[in-house]
Length: 243
Image (cartoon, rainbow, N blue to C red; front, side):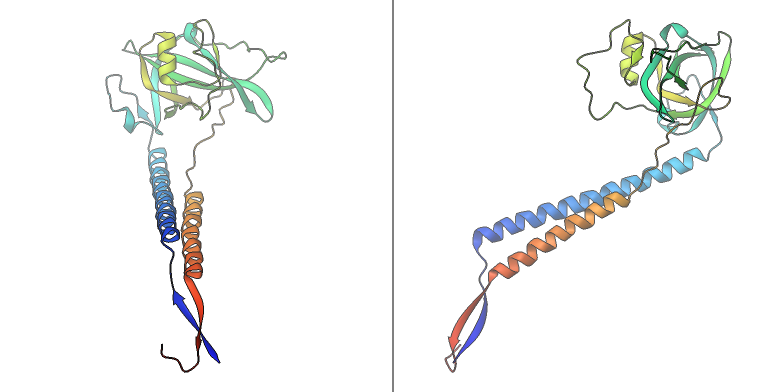
């Protein structure tokens, strides 16, 4: 008769691969937990700033980071010569444009970009006729910093005469227009004046990142379990023999 012995004999190269894999998976898991914490912080910031009363834009202030996601009030005149249309914007299934107009802030020579809202495209999907007031106006809305899409398929910069853009960035607009602008874009609210102002407001959620973190940690445990199973060797020992 013989007895079955279980012996632990991990293979060197397999062990190295397992250690590297576990370290990688754990690092990815902690990275996702960090991303989740960032999303929670951003959600708290958004909730806090959106609950504040509107702040009047100080023409001479440079504390613009404190205004992002806040409602602000600005007074001035629109400059329609440098107005642009952001194309391919949808509302209730209809194609249209966002109208972005520079507002020369009263008492300064600087301009605040104002997204005045969505307007439907012309019947031929061309640019609509947009009326811009020429008197002093006061605008209210949420201040944001627009970002380009993750994938930009344009072959080059927007031509100087082009006023239909796929998206807007502050640097791109400043270079195109030559205007001194504030580093903010105001999403106008209030009376619609023929515009639709149903803005998609970011709502950060940490659930996805927590799920990814659990997934990476689970991968690390699975790798460890497989390594343990492969490292245990069964051998036969005759009964009565010395261990």
